[in-house]
Length: 346
Ligand code: GTP
Image (tube, rainbow, N blue to C red; front, top):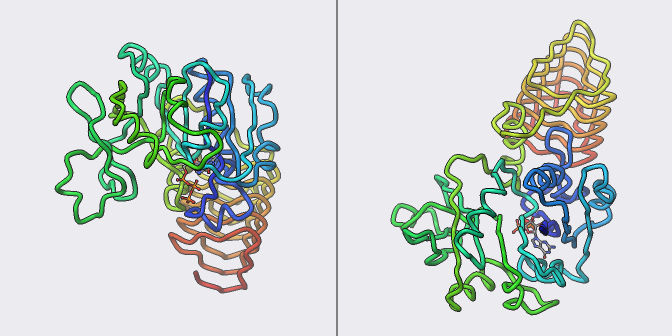
């Protein structure tokens, strides 16, 4: 069985984090995001995985290698120009004559893919979409299903005002099971979107098209900074089932520093006396000065936070320098190589 991971988007909403790091490679608790997806696929017995790339493809290939260490076969396909989600699937899946699982490369979930595939097969579906009920569907495409699970229609990104009148609160979760016949609906090499171009045609043709609602599973797309941060914090709190906690690296932590048991740190981290690290992630080589407090935050590799600084609810990119006694407040997102002078407040 095959899978295609759509990992070629520019990730504009996750800027500045995606300026130097493509979205599928951003670290979640010190591990490249795509590795969680690969693990989920492997758990469902899928070991032939095609990565559909367009933006910064080399960085993704470098991080993942050939997949041997991960116990899967990875194939990388780079589009000559971005083809959109549907076009990218068609391009990457060309020649695959088997049922294929397609994942948006920005979905963190503990969905049991084997159960999704089983439902797809039992119903004899041509296409099955995983659906997730959410409170605020305004960022997403809504999917309306009938009682028998077949898909009735799609409503793309409804306005907040219209939400109370909507017939459903289940959104397209960005996880699909598709029969090879779906490829016939997408011209090879052309830009197409699943949501706007491919799914409406499946409906029009009257093909067996089902939704599979994820009522209890964890699901989050990491496409905006707030949800990227929350994905890390959810992983720290153990909300996702089936993913082992990332082990701490070999680090130099002062005995007079306090790191709570939830926080995770990578190799080469230095934490000076009097510092407090609470519910946070420190990437490789991060240095934390004396009496600095880091809370509910994610700090990428090789960033230095000088003494007396306070960082709360923030994401700080690679190789930044945060000056002494600086305050970084909740919601802040600093791109790679940011420099904050002493006493700065953001
Ligand atoms: P934004 O720019 O922030 O909207 O993010 P994005 O570029 O990732 O777009 P979006 O979140 O809509 O994409 C959903 C998934 O499809 C992501 O995993 C993207 O990597 C992927 N994707 C989007 N467009 C393309 C494309 O043209 N080619 C490929 N290969 N993947 C794509």
